[in-house]
Image 1 (cartoon, protein in one colour):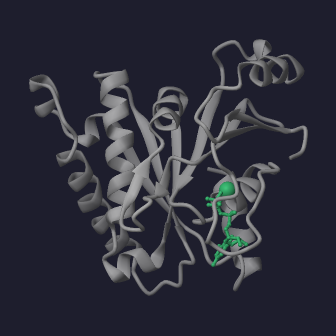
Image 2 (cartoon, protein in one colour):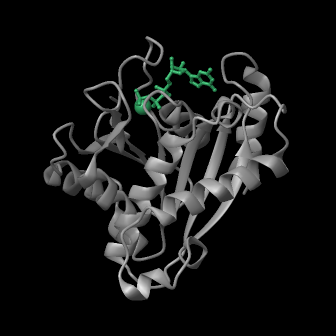
Length: 233
Ligand SMILES: Nc1nc2c(ncn2[C@@H]2O[C@H](COP(=O)(O)OP(=O)(O)OP(=O)(O)O)[C@@H](O)[C@H]2O)c(=O)[nH]1
Ligand SMILES: [Mg+2]
């Protein structure tokens, strides 16, 4: 892994305090004061988080070469984005469960990134919408919502930017938006809430938006153009 990238939380979910301290010094983060944003890339293993982080932020997160069978970036990795006061984080927040059915949550990673991120880029393949196999998205959102409520419990807005990967225009963006709204509601309904929390909706805490990205492998030029466009947002 290159110098510009550090593992903030390791595969055992332990915070690497000394790496953070030395990077904060090298990157002169104290000069930023409170004027910065943290953007976290998340999604199911192999969903293209690191590839998008590298393309969007010129980061050097490691990309798995062997397809989607193993997770190449366990833990939470961080990279300073050059030219802006932004830190990008590449976070393993969920893993396939040992039984092979469903997911397990990397709880400490979830809580950490939820506490510090102002934007989540949630990678979702367009095929998820066609097959109605939405459980991965709902699972991930449910844990982000739970951590957010536990940490903040008050109106503190975080942006969920859904990156629709391998987008082929078969599902209109209006339709994607409407399906995502049902995923968000479904995830919110699954969160354990206090009496006060029950009166709130996910919209009180989260804004959401989508960006459609063609396949990096099948349509690299279109992918690059869409990422360049996203960078200006
Ligand atoms: N179909 C498709 N594959 C992609 C795309 N972007 C990256 N990949 C491939 O998908 C695999 C996983 O990419 P990564 O960027 O490592 O995905 P990740 O979510 O960071 O993976 P883990 O860290 O292992 O969870 C690699 O073999 C990439 O080459 C894409 O837009 N479409
Ligand atoms: Mg990765």
